[in-house]
Length: 121
Image (cartoon, rainbow, N blue to C red; front, side, top):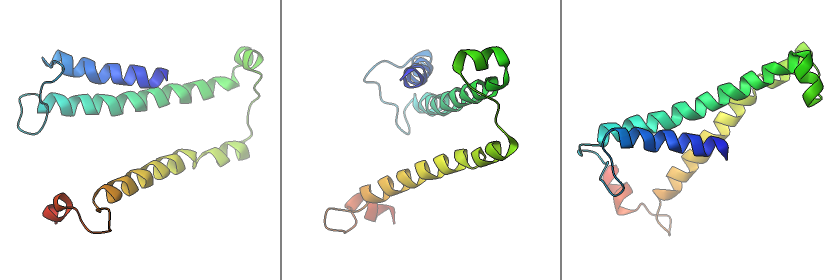
């Protein structure tokens, strides 16, 4: 929840700094389109920065005072190796979900392409 709040704050802060007000158009060809793209990038960068913070927190499990506070112990090399594919699996699952969502939006109720999807072809 905290990550979502700070990431969205970065998004709206970026738009606001560009002169955006609620209801202003931000689509292609508008004066705020570049700001919208920057706000989208800010959102992505905020998510990544939050994950980097999480990675630092995982690194802290090796400091004995922190281990005592959180009840953690150092991991062996084999256990760390098991963690290596986790980011790729999570990213891949997220991309698959997005791909399926885009595909379902481009198909009409009866399995035919919607006029918008057909026009893109």
